Length: 373
Image (cartoon, rainbow, N blue to C red; front, top):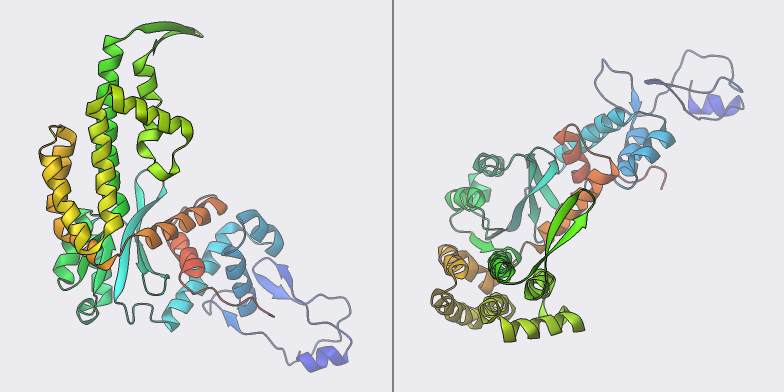
């Protein structure tokens, strides 16, 4: 039946979901005709036709709504939603070359499922869009991206930001040696924060063995609770971690107490803050500050920071590139957070392909327009 014939007969062109097929409501329709009209459809020829606007609406809702909302509103199962997402994103990727014109990219991994299940994601720093994702967290995954990008496009890359992992930096240096590999400042400072926490635990254990321990009854167990200086050190962890400009009054008092009573821990805290200051200065001034910091860390007689100085020397060219170009993985971390939100809204994914397709729709600029708008 043609749309004109349906309108002339007094009927309305509405579609009702019935399993995997579509049919118009029976009430109010004229007599059958030999000429039938179907909207543009997706899917293989062997499968029942699915209207294109239905797929677009499901894909749009999947990028903006929760699982329960989509399944109840569209009257389909979540497995069908995953199939539609894969189909729509596949068509959008085939029509768009997302790897064209890449110059500055960032690479990181994200855990999407328990059991060490990871995705490697690549983000374009210039557009802020997710351009590539694949399961895995090995050098072979990075080589797979480089192979898909091609040798000619790899030679056009100018900057690559990462967290300092060897399985990223090794293949990146082999495939794109001209690109400046920038170490993420947050991860470098987190190395110093981890070393500081190791020193704090060491000082806490020493104070706990030297101080008084009070046994406390907790249900059927007896817990040995530290008192005095050991208890104060255990509660000073967040004061040592936080930036000085974000400290509360009580946390400032704890740091003042540590400065007077535990100079060993206080020196470790100053080393952590000194490394953070390096990335605030940037440029040649930051390089000079980093050289002074390395000289201090080598002579500080704190084993944790001595090892950290050796690690930073191994990544020194990447850190210098970060100070020169000011590139970080902050944009990539924000994309990771949004992917976690997508996973939480969907209550998890059995297949990483569905998660990648949904992430591309929501964060890769492939989301179709809402039909009828």
